Length: 118
Image (cartoon, rainbow, N blue to C red; front, side, top):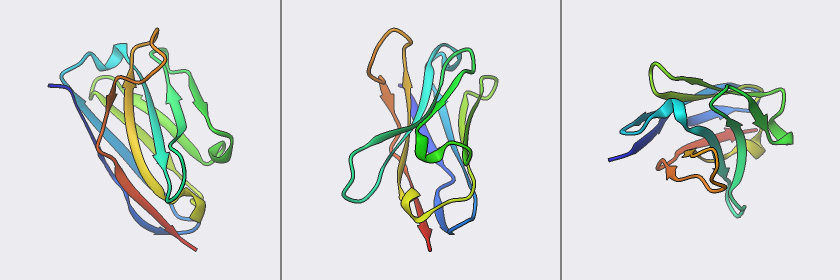
């Protein structure tokens, strides 16, 4: 059974940092493109950052220069380093796994809450 388990969320003051992790199992992690999504209160879900199987990354404009997505294929784990956090980063953060040729992401975690206080 495929599992994606996020951890590392919590409460932090503006300007602080958090590192999210997404431990995965039961699928060939290295063959999947991975992503972090978030959904803030009253907002639609948005893609925060993606990383493909070659390590190429993309970021939504609001987090460029502050967030870094990375993957460790040996550990089957995805990371999101979040620095210079702002109150508008407050959201539930989800990791997702997708097959390269499919538009939608196939597997999703349950999410981890990030709350940034100003």
